[in-house]
Amino acid sequence: MANNMQRVEIEPSMDVVKWQKLTWVNIKRPTEQAMQYLAQNYAFHPLTLDDCVSGVHLPEVHEYENYIFIILHFPVFDPHSRITVSSQVAMFLGKDFLVTVHSGDLKPLANLPLRCQKDDKVCGEYLGQDSCYLLYRIVDTLVDYWFPIVDKTLSNLSKIEDKVFDSERDVSREVTILRRDIAAQRRIIGLVKNVIAGLGQKVERFAQADLKAYFGDINDHLDHLWNDIEECHETIEIYKDTHMLLREEKTNKIIAVLTILFTVTLPATVVATLFGMHVNIPGGSETGGWTGFLGSYTTFIIVLLVSFASAVIMLLLFRRWRWL
Figure 1 (tube, helix red, strand yellow):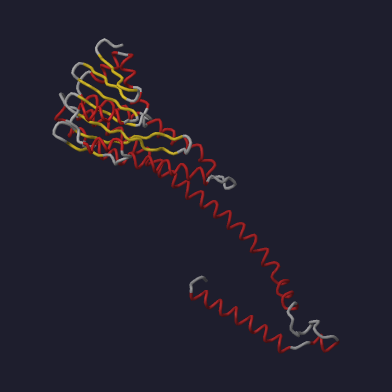
Figure 2 (figure 1 turned 180 degrees about the vertical axis):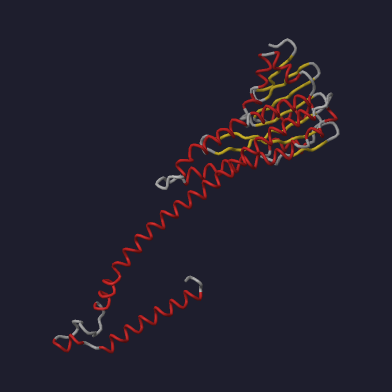
């Protein structure tokens, strides 16, 4: 164990790491016992404790007399659904303490207490100054954890590019899944950017040194992530439109072929329809002999006039509706 730190495992889901005057409480998958520990040892507002376990809340910062309550979201990729989901981290920042409450799926944060126990140098890097610097290091680590996820998204875009421009391949499902993933990441980054942008100024009252430059560096990283994910968003929209146009073009070609076939067979269809009616027309077989062959020209003319009138009415309606 490191010489200058003390790590106490209150229960499997909670670690208490102490370094000099600084205490860091890290709770993974908060349980009732862990939340009772916080209620008994810290003067946190009950509503903030409820927010840690009552589902996902929007990123926000609330200032209290002796501490600041912070909620941030960071991405976790779900390999089953192939969609990035949001993982919430709730933080209580005080003068000599930091409490982090999360679901345990953010590996850099979940594994950090054990790393501090194994390596005195790592513990000093994170807890060697004050609680605000520890907050900065944790947030910075989680933001850096974001880059491989965005890089993977860029890689996925490159992989489906050739498929999208191949009209013979249907990539609708792949494009849809990737669009959902990019939309989820855009939403998370957008909300976190707004909160972290003003976080450096709000934690000043607990900081022993000026950390504006450090939090500004985090903002630069988030801007980089935002630009990358915006590029992904624009690219996937182009892919979606291109795929739809290619599919529509293929459908139009099929319809054109079917239309040509219908047009070629139309004369035979008209002749067969006329002579297949159960009325006495010239050339029909309703009555025998020469008289039957001549048939009734009156009936024939009426049939033609009704057909012609119907066609004219349809053309007039189509022009009125601006279909032609």
